[in-house]
Length: 202
Image (cartoon, rainbow, N blue to C red; front, side, top):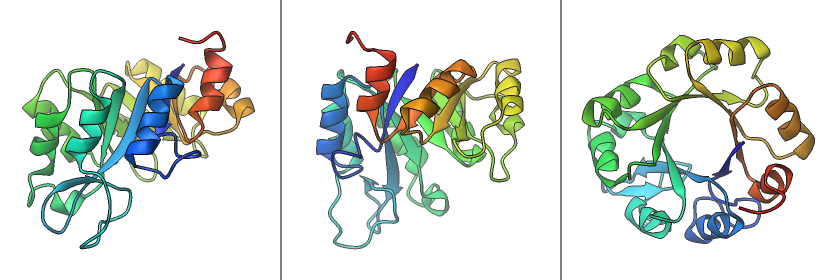
C-alpha cells in the first residue's frame, strides 16, 4: 500500500506546513501530498485555501527543499483560474523531481504537465463530474473515499491506472480498501496506515 500523507501528517501538525511534512518523513510515509496555489503576487505557495495577501504559508520551493531526497511529493494544483496567468503548471514542473507526482481535479493542467515533461507521473482525481475516462492518460486515478466503488476500481485497472483513494483515516477502512485492490491511500493519519501495512518498519 502506498501511504500518502495528506497535507503532511496533518492530524499531528498543522496541514500544509513544514512541520507536517517533516513529521510525515520521520514516520516513513511514501509521499507527502501538498496543495499548490498562486498567491496574489504570483508566488507558488503551499496552502489549501486561496491565499490572502500577507498570509503565512511556505512557498513551494521551501516545501520541496525540505522533501527532496527524503520523500516523494504529490503536488495538487489548486488554482485553475490562475494556471495560465501565473504559469503555475510550467513553474511547478520545473521544480518537481523525477519521482514526484502532479495531482489535479481538472484534466487540462495535467495534459499541460505531460506535454512539458513526458516522464512526469500524473494523478487525475475522478468523480464529482469527472469521468474515469478523463484519467486514461494519467498514471493514477484518485477516488473519493465516500464515492469509490468496485466498478470504478475495476475500470481503473482495465485502463492501467493505479487506483488511489482520499482521504482515509480509519484502519478498518484502510484494510477494506486494500482488500478491494486499492494501491494507495491519502491519509491524515500516516502513522495508522504505516502501522497497519508496514508494521515491521521500513
